Amino acid sequence: MKKILITIVIVSIQIFSQTEVESFYSFKQQIVKDISLTTEAEQQTVFDEVKQKKNTGLAILYSLLLPGMGELYADAYDSGIYFTVADGVLWGTYAGMNIYANWQKDRYISYSQSKAGVTTEGKDEDYYAIIGEYSSIDQFNDEKALERNFDEMYNTEKYFWKWNTSNEQKAYKSMWTSSEQTFNDVRFVVGALLLNRVVSAINAVRLVSRYNSNLSTEVGWNVSLGVQSYPDNTSSYKIDFTTAF
Image (cartoon, rainbow, N blue to C red; front, side):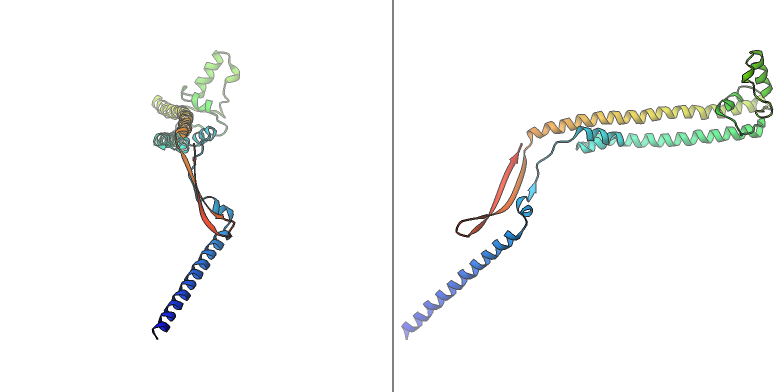
């Protein structure tokens, strides 16, 4: 009886061991099969951190479009932010000055209509400049006649004006001067906008050059995962680690 029990135990252990081996082998084969079905792209690269050089042409273009963006492209926006802020301030100044200059222009035109009898039809910028210098069209025409510049004389009906007092003329001249001076100052703001872009582009080129120079001392790295097959129909995972200078 004792021998029978020992025999039963030995047979049970052998059957259990064989079942476990077959289960493990089947599980391994299924994993290899699943991995083999993945695309080559999925097996090739898991992570790539190799840095690429920056293009100076793009840095210049970005800075010309919006100052500071070239520095952002060069990973150095800590200095580029000042160009962006300056650009915003300059555009705000440009808009504000244009609004003020046009407002003053509307004021002096309306003032000349109500105080000097001016009609706006067919009047150019030179006309509005002249009426601030002369008390009336008669004074202007008399001066041109004395100078024998008869072709510069105005038609008294179409271009009529006459200031009632010298104070009215001075008030008009003040509004006209304020408007014209502001329009002239706008040109300096436009120049500052262009200069800000040029300086930002130069700075961006410098930063891109420094960025590219630093790449020679930095190490990029790449990790790839794949499946290695062997002649005995077995497979294993393969991990590659490469560096790039």
